[in-house]
Image (tube, rainbow, N blue to C red):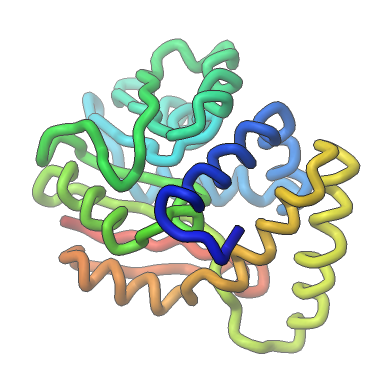
Amino acid sequence: MSSLSGAGRARQVQSMFTRIAPRYDLMNRLMTAGQDVRWRREVIRLAGLKPGALMLDLGAGTGDLAREALRQQPDCRPVATDFTLAMMLYGRAHSDSQRIAWLAADALRLPYPDACFDAVVSGYLMRNVADVQAALREQKRVLKPGGKVVILDTTRPHPNPFTPLVYFHLHAVIPFLGWLVTGQRDAYTYLPDSTEKFLRAEELAARMAAAGFREIAYRRFMVGTMAIHWGRK
């Protein structure tokens, strides 16, 4: 899949997420030993939502970040956007999803006016988009001046003593878990492949700067394989 680009890659990514939607949340918990819940909590904390804030959860999947936003700031207004309808349908089935606005859309062509959101957050979106720079520009476009962007995603770690363990987890444990839980081994072969081909944390920070964000910072987790980036318009 990683050799494709543009519309072809988008269609295959969309098809993959449609197939794994029923077990997507469970697999996230298993792959990260439950740590992704803590990371999503930190994403929303960094977004700094105030009462009445309009927040875009981009590449929302089942809406974990949107629901976490309501837990931390019950008076915010989350909008969940994804281009995989099946993921959002599973998300809407959650009993605590009724206050979230859901809309199917492409992260490279958002159907929102300029400067309308107080914050844009995403979880595991950026490594799946066909054009990272275009996605960042769109996020900046829909942010209000002074608005925050917060990105949670995998990142390529620098070689370290844990590198053999990380490789084994990515290429053996995750595909096996994916096959066992979802029956979709190929989808969970794509995950390590996309992780290893994605930008390093410092490279994504540089892309954010090139898109016009300021006050950019990031923090790595899980022996350098995950990172949260944040910045301001």
